[in-house]
Image 1 (cartoon, rainbow, N blue to C red):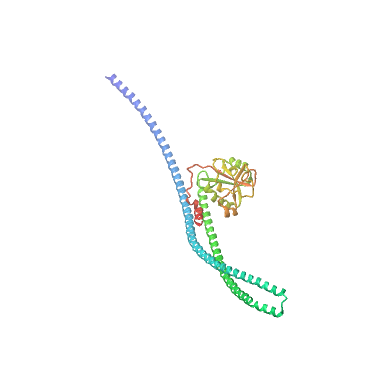
Image 2: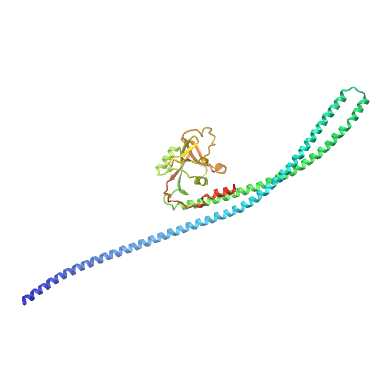
Length: 391
């Protein structure tokens, strides 16, 4: 029994050694778990801090977006106010035009009366001339005949009736001439009134045009401000779905212009139809007059965009540059010509053909954007719509 008991005690010691070993392992695992937990807590705190920082950054960006939207809303309100002002001016202009038309009609009626009077006067003057011819014949007859003094006196007496008739016609002619002078005075007064009304109308049209340009400038500034937050167009000018970079530190030929754009990862620009007019106005306001190479070439009056291989709208090309052979000369390149005179007189035709080797042109580059990058700018056609209403 003692040996059996000793054996059992030994088994108990062996079991205790196993328990102690397991306890040590559990203790080690507990320490490892504690270390892991501390590391996890540290990582969690770092993640929370980073998340807080990102949340604050996101909140700041959201606030910037709200501020930008407030600015856009303010500019939109300015454009709306200018639109209402132009609408009122347009109604006033229509009323002034109607008044001017009535004056013109009255002027036409007055001139018609003068025309009738002039016709009658011409007829009477013709009769006077005919009678004068008769008188000349009679006087000549008296001078050449050798009749007696008594007979000559008798012949002169016979001339009294046509002479009296001539005097009557002369008096009537003087009266008619006075009527003509009075009528011409009335016509001149009408003409002065019409001229004054026309000057007023021209002044109002110029004021409307200034308001349009002011609204257009506000719109462009809004678009440019918004473009700074559009990915892919950080340093350029953004219109609709196009991002441009203007290179004005050098002037070169068309081939070198293309290389300059390629060296910066850009392309020589292909300007969309809806963008050409506002872009031209922006370049005129920002940089003044100048000519910019664009990516279009052609001959015989047909020009193609070189990258997209699409035809350039022929209505946008100004061919009257003083070169008689420019329409049929091969290897011509287009440039976007920006000038005050061109903007005032022919803003719808900003493209001009030139010899591709000319070096008097700046460079207009384009950064290609993804189709998803689009600035929603429904006011882009603001000027075009106002112009259509005026027309």
